[in-house]
Length: 375
Image 1 (cartoon, rainbow, N blue to C red):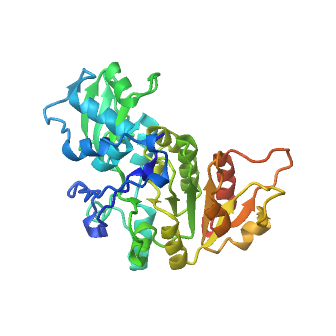
Image 2 (image 1 turned 180 degrees about the horizontal axis):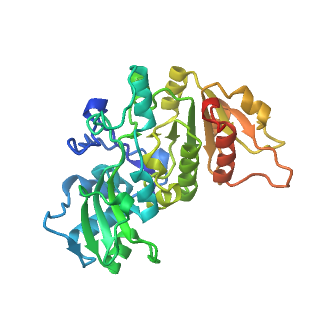
């Protein structure tokens, strides 16, 4: 299991008019790597990955238009991007497998965080009159497309500015890590979005607004190690227009290949920050957030537990809040239980709890901000 918080990578924060995620300004990471053994199990990473990443960058020669060998150095580089979180984040690149997730994020327009920023400045967006690549990437930047031989690139992702490399079935299998590749015709090598941050130091007030503009709803994930559950929660939070996601220690990497498949490209559409409770406390104070945590009702629980209902949801509809969800195995951490008001989903059936992604979907829907509820 790949755990995101073993290596905390601090990156320089860029202003909107010098975004690292643009074609004119490729991302430059000023990297400081610190081992925090208390965050995770030591076997989660290969400790040599960061050393290899710091010494070696594998470029794709400009004249290469076809790759037929799985021993190709660039193929090995891509496999390592898929397998190693530290390698992935050092290079700032991720593999997105399959036409559907690539198509979904290729449709992205102006990010919500930038729209709000412009609104606060009294500016509005008129498509075609502002070059958003100079300020903020309007959609994830694709470095390269690997296309299976004799397959056409779908029209929605056929960008003449994107480099295309044709590969055979063996190379597609090697890069994707998927044994059944009947539906895999395209793989995209994509830059990790500039809306993703790993916080490794004290969080200042100005950083809060860099990560989350004016948040009304933040989903906090506490030790969610299963990439399928994490990806599904990211997808649901994006679907219900939550403002961002905060990953506490012990969560898997949201750019893990399984998490990417589960989120269907949603991690490119919503701000995601990885840090600890000290950072959440700074966010809570800055944005006056109420703190709630999903928790199964237990008769022996010393803390009072609220029941999720329409009346409860209506009572907090206009209040900014954080919702904390814990893993299925360990549940909420002691700190989460003691810091947040606990809320449970009432169930008529005799089950103690729901799968965290199912419970999360119910919470995320019920606790939508008033302005985002469908008419």
